[in-house]
Length: 391
Image 1 (tube, rainbow, N blue to C red):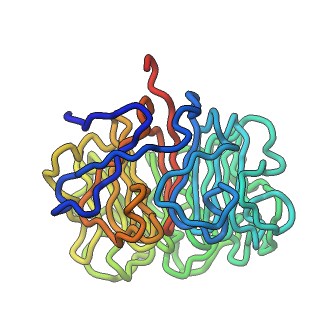
Image 2 (image 1 turned 180 degrees about the vertical axis):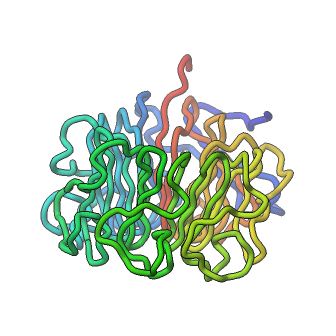
């Protein structure tokens, strides 16, 4: 695969004045502090920052990715909601941003503009995190934990009482391998089965009748073989034996079945019954990789994204925000497209007020580095990078 030349100490930025958006055009901009970037996996953030969710001590949005000084090594997982962010560093959880409902897990409700350690998770053992609109989830030694707001039972502890500190989800004390958080509900994979809890106003728990649950319940038809889950505002996706399943809200065609009728039960998406390898749920849309091609949901079902765009291939992971999208390629580069409100695509100086990019734009990592993982929600994102060995 052909990649653009990369000069030491400089990063590429898509030229907003270049004619057309089908091919990526690049300018080189000196990125400050390049020389002191760590080699171990570290985190960077970009986009909207009205609640301090970028973690750099300010509330100023940034279209240029910002290296988080407090998370400068051994970051292994990241997640974000519209107003707060989470990261796992050396097996411990760090949080920052809005904390009105205790979603940072530090005790109290004070907003934090820089990463702070989540209480109770100072030691190792945490493998993943997820962020809902006002609550947070984590997996520690195979068990699920939750904290923050709980008005719909999204913490899964049998009550509607908020928790300012992480608390166990009693029914999920072992075997949990994945978690996801919607606005007011939560999902988990335990021993290959999907469990859901919290609000069920749009059928997003995958159960009948349409009543919420204060504790985890098994989603219908997803009792084994599930390897991935994703949650949007009110809809859900899962991969089971390579097939794509979707359920919940569908006002914008996010389920990919065609039409706008919600589904209270998980159902296979027609035409995608095998070879689905990655999924992501935005606020009101969905993404997936099927037989190596990226698809997005629409009124008439799933359609390819920029099919045939040179270099837009070998995608291994996806992330979706309100209307912004990110794809991680196997070579450690990112492709971004959609809304660029508040710099949500992280394309660098000169692009902050470019409202959207309909075609995927190639976003290279800093010289000598590669991206390992990415998350986004609403209009901001967070990614994990590491140094390329031997450089």
